[in-house]
Amino acid sequence: MSRNQENDPQKSAAPAPSLKPATIDIPLMARNGKKAARMLVSLSTEVKNSLLSQMAAALEEKRPLIQAENRKDLAAGRLKGLSAAMLDRLELSDKVMAAMISGLHEVQALPDPVGEISNLVKRPNGLLVGRMRIPLGVIGMIYESRPNVTVDAAALCLKAGNAIILRGGSEAIHSNLVLVEVLQGVLAANSIDPAAIQVIPVTDRAAVTELLAQEEFIDLIIPRGGEGLIRFVAETSRIPVLKHYKGVCHIFVDQSADFNKATPVIMNSKTQRPGVCNALEGLLIHRAIAADYLPVIARQLTAAGVELRGCAESVALVPAISPASASDWGTEFLDLILCVKVVGSLDEAMDYMAAHGSQHTEVIVTEDYSNAQRFMASVDASAVMVNASTRFNDGGQLGLGAEIGISTTKLHAYGPMGLSELTTRKFVVYGAGQVRS
Image 1 (tube, one colour):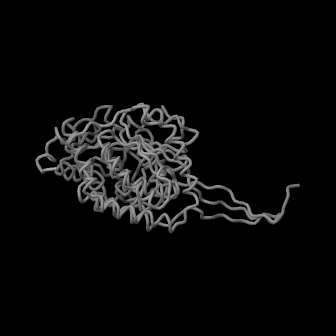
Image 2 (image 1 turned 90 degrees about the vertical axis):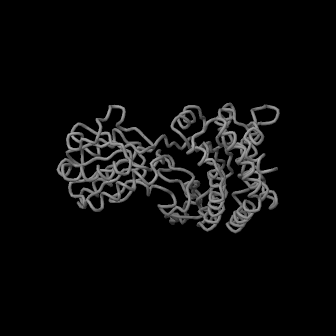
Image 3 (image 1 turned 120 degrees about the horizontal axis):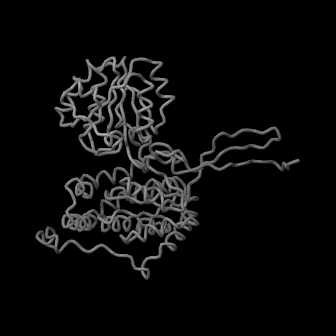
C-alpha cells in the first residue's frame, strides 16, 4: 500500500463487521471460554510467564500489521467526527505499542496469586483448614475506545488463570480483532486453547445483550467506559457486575492544613490529567482558613485554566469564582472545571462527600492527627488519603503493578483491581480420616 493510500480515509476505512447469527455465536463463545478456563487453572506460573513473554515478542513482530489495522479505525473515526482526544486514545502509536509490550513484561514479573494458601489453622479434631486463592473463571469485559486495554486485560486475566471475552468499542474493532489474533496465535503455538482470550467480532449492541445473559458460563462482567455504558450493563446483566459509574473525587483542606502541602496536592489532582476518573472535581475549604487560603489557591487554579464554580461564601471571597448551579455539585466534569465550597467543620465536609461523592477517592489535607484518623475511618470510598493527590488511586501507583479497572462497589473488590482481585478463595481441608460426630 502506498503512503497516499494509507492516508486516504475513503480507501483505508473498512466498514466494521456487523452482527450475523450465522457467523457469531455468543453462547458458543461463552461455553468455549468456560472450557478454556478449566485448562488455565492447571497452568504453572512458569508457563503463564512464558506465554506473556512470547505475547510481548509477538506484538513487536506484528507491529506493522497491528498499526495498519489501527489506521483503519483512525480513518473511520475521523469520518465519524471523533474528537482529537478520542482519536488520541484510539491510536496505537509507537509509544502506546511500547507501553503495551512493557505492560506484558510487568504482569509477567508480578507474583502469581493462584494456588496461594493462607489462614491455615489446625482444628481441635486435627483437620487443617485454610483458604486457597483460585481464578474467578470467565471474565466478560465491555469497554470503550483505547485498544491497549485489550492487551492489558488479557494479560491480567491470563496471569490470574481466567479466560476472558472482550467486547471493545465499535471505533476500535479492527485494532481489537488483530490484537486478539496475535495473542491467540501465541496460545495456539503452545497448545493452549485460544478461547482463553476471545473478542466479540461485531459491533452491534445485540451482541452485548446476549453476552450479559450467559450467566451459566461467565462469572463476572467488568464494564469500563462512560456512566451510560456502565448503567446499561448493570441494568441488563444477569451476571454479577463490578461497577464504577463515575469518579467524583474531593479534597478537604482542614483548618490545620499546611498550605505548602495543600497547593501542589490540589493542583496535581485537578490539572495533571483532568479527563480521568481520579481527577479532582470538588474542593472543600474549612471556613477558618478560607479567607486566607482560598484566594491563593484560586489564583493558581485560574492561572492554569481551571474554571471555578462555587458556593455563595466562596464567591464573596473570590470574585473570579462563578456561582455554582445545583447541578454542578457532584458532577464529574472530566475537564478544567472545579466546584469550590466553604464548610464549617470536618463533619460537614464528610457529609458533603457522602452526599455528592461517588465512592472513588476522597482526600483530607491536614496536620491534625486525630482529624486524619477520623477521616480515614469514617469516609466511604475505594481510596481515602491524607495529604496526597487523588491521582494516586491507580493500580500501578498503589503497588498492584497493573489493574483491570477501579471498582466503586464492595463485592467482591473495592478500588483498583489487580491480580488478586481477579481471583477468589476457596476453603481447603487436609484430613487424616476424620469423620463428623
